Image 1 (cartoon, rainbow, N blue to C red):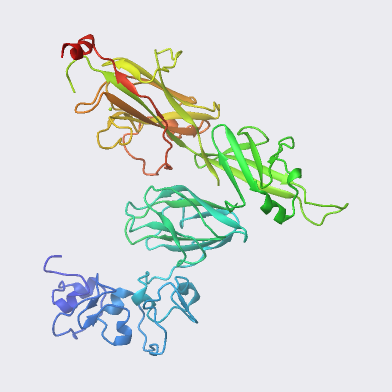
Image 2: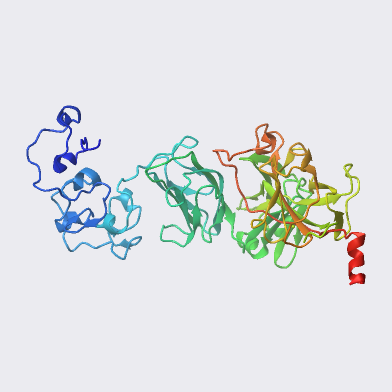
Length: 526
């Protein structure tokens, strides 16, 4: 408060307000330091010359005068002996009974200088819904989700699968502080935080992760500032790639199981079938393959956090040469989670009449094509597509699988003079569902399995006559009345972030500007 202070440091700086003791609740004392001393406030964890704010000052005897006020350590006269092992150069390791691991905060066996070298929060997290050891399949989420998580949250999950399987982790919701070094999730490929690092999830970077072993460790941290609604992620046990895999597209599901792995479990490959017992596999000398249309063989479709999940089961009998068996029937759950977005890309080249010089997891297959008129009866098959400047162009983005339970919404279409760079010189036709180009006219979007629009042909100055067009389409459940596909134009980012995924790109073209009669004559005259 200017020269008048209500801070506890005013006792040492000599600028306390006149009624400090009446309202601030500190005991009256006349024992003030003779000169101002360095304070731990805002400096906890740092050395300040002879006065130290590091936790080691408790052992070195050089703590700042207000060390216990600001650093949160309790005063004690019992210090460890010098024979104790140190965390220096060993943070993240076990040292016999003395531990440098994160878990030592819960197990009570941290090394004496743990806080000096490992730089973790001094506030020991509580157990309960935050963190834990989990097996098989399930869900993890931030504390209080879907409500806001707390400042200084710190959670550790150890995920474990059967010895011959691995962990698949997929984030379905994410809303953290917009600062990757403040609030984030770290993923480790193994049972410890010293295991190989798989990656970090922060802001709106929704991702999926696979472990290489049957362990995965997940850590969530938040700082002391902004909080969000946190995250939700699903994990499940999955076969290792050498044992089996599943791939999906709009049209098919393909399941491949290694024959040696199946034999090691004691099951007969010739007895395998899907939920529809008439769907049998093809068997080779080294693998068993089921390949079938996505909506057949008893496959069940359901919606999960905006994604479409297709589920089936592989069933079979154990190998047996007698009349009885002592082994259970095989039932192997198969899931395909389809990414909710798709990107298609085509190109046109404009004819200028003047002298001016564009768990598997799967993904829906989308295509984009030009049509000759607004009736969309005839697709343009000429390559390159020759158009005139300012000509009306008609475009259709289409899902190859026409599913009445899904709708397709055209989120963004951008043109560029290069098929490899849509950021340096972009010209948006539609962005976040909103019309940007004055000639862009949506014909249908967000109500069926396809989107149609029209715009007038243009060309880029200081470039070639070629124009490339890339469109991003979102695919949503038709039953969700408030999905992104239904909401239409969004002028600003929603606070609760939509899932984001990497996108496939389909390239078609080129499309070129038709040359005028005058331009055709120019080479002859020259």
